[in-house]
Length: 276
Image 1 (tube, helix red, strand yellow):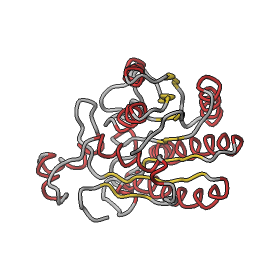
Image 2 (cartoon, helix red, strand yellow; image 1 turned 135 degrees about the vertical axis):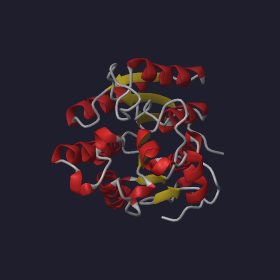
Image 3 (tube, one colour; image 1 turned 90 degrees about the horizontal axis):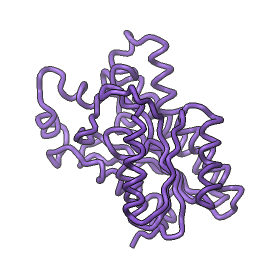
């Protein structure tokens, strides 16, 4: 049985759509962890902006953690700002006592983050996409790893990549490049941090159901040509449906747990049987 009793987790992307971070934070709490809920807060953010969330959305994730009987922190932070990320991890240790699990689940897709043909993408969009989907994960992993090394008791870092990291997708080139970089980063950090007892892994989901939170990148790509999301899922995914946020979160929880004590440097495809 997976058990996080007595452990503390830092979860970036805790409120962003399509809900993987929220499901992970709640799952960690349900299994005994106290959780620092981290995300980029912008109260003007709308459904088309999947990289930023409203303050009330982040607060709602923290309240859901508390409803499981665990402590929760709300930490609004620009996850592409190195000093801010370092400060958020320091605040986690100061308020919750330690750090055992780091989850880099931020990122985003959509028109504001590089969707479209690579030959038409402007340099600003390219850099924004890499910052959101690669640099933020590196900064989070770096900050968590430094704290875990100082503690001397090991730990687990899990980052969100994508099936797009494993095979090029037209219209998602910048996003795919960023998430592919995250896969290589995961492998490198696993080898560097292994001697300190720190495991580093990633998950690569394919099509997470938008639900109420939205998933603009998936919607834009899957529904091109007038098809529905359901038709896309039936044609692309052997299980014939989109995946729930919890189905990705469950893999993250396993990788962060002692049940995966000899798993490191892996990027796990979570795609309902669809090939990479």
